[in-house]
Amino acid sequence: MTLSIDTDLITIDKIQLYPDQQVETNMLRLDKIHSQISGNKWFKLKYYLAQAVLEKRPGLISLGGPWSNHLLAVAAAAREAGLKSIGVIRGEAPVQYSETLQDLCNLGMKLDFVSRSAYKNKTQLTDELNQSYPGFLVVDEGGQGPAGAKGAAEILQYVPDLPAYTHILCAVGTGTMLAGLTLAAEKQQVMGICSLKAKEEQTNTILNMFPALANRFEILTDYHFGGFARYNKELTDFMNQFYRQTGIPTDIVYTAKLSYAWQQLYLDNFFPPGSRILLIHSGGLQGNRSLPPGILTF
Ligand SMILES: *Cc1c(COP(=O)(O)O)cnc(C)c1O
Image (tube, rainbow, N blue to C red):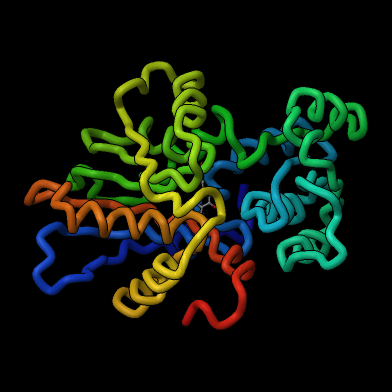
């Protein structure tokens, strides 16, 4: 499917925070492929979208929060593919829509607000959605599931010298991208930096999908900064410093925590000398609009 995604824009940028940095580190810039269908969300979505087109579905339904990178990608991709889209939003409808919710409306996505308790009961919610919107393809939250992981496995095709890397580090929400990267990795140590507190959940989701991946990846949980979408001044100061030194913007929910974790692991001498690290910039920059103005310098 040819949407306005441009994978030619992907670059591999050097990350050097210290003049005498011992460990060569590069970042795969998936954030550049599209402003709304950003980063890993395109890869996780592509097979769902292809399925909906192939099966001549009227559209896609998916779920997320008011700043969801995933829903924005669904809305924009569906529109370009000529499909309708429904966004099921966690929580009551706010008086003032977030900028992301406004974008969703502008892209023609129909918004359905559901209470947090109803949102939690995914089986019942999915049944109700199937009844309310017959024929629509329900894409699980964050594009999780085997089709999402299959798409994410294609990410590493954009790394020409993949065998030269010893470690691959990515952010973890549902763990779908981590699963895909692990499927496609060669000998590398694949490490996920969890953006939220739960780790067993992601590990179980991955192993339920792909039992053969047991012991092939690890998830680190020391870098969530209090939980999903939580942050403090140390993190935002780090984002500004990282941007000043590398020219690379990171997002507050995922890639800032990933980059911070990499720095800490480096300073703790976690990576043996001669290691070559690949960080995945999975996009999500639009979510920085949730921050009060003046905090970020980019
Ligand atoms: C959604 C998202 C993730 C999390 O991906 P999962 O496959 O759910 O683990 C990571 N980074 C960014 C920027 C995202 O938008």
